[in-house]
Image (cartoon, rainbow, N blue to C red):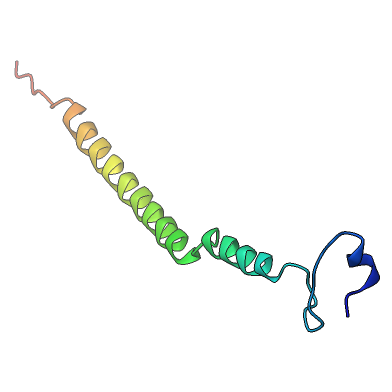
Length: 80
């Protein structure tokens, strides 16, 4: 038996169906699955970014300490 509100719109439903177009639900599930985000990859990227930041900071401090050591003038002894 088709509900009266669906007869006016021309929607055909069998007595056991609760939705007029059940294939739309499966299409929506496929779309949701395609747009689903895997958070594992995002976590890996964040960890790699943190490691990169730490390594970059280490390299910058080492380079600056080496350049400071080269800029220190040597003491010259003057004998009279």
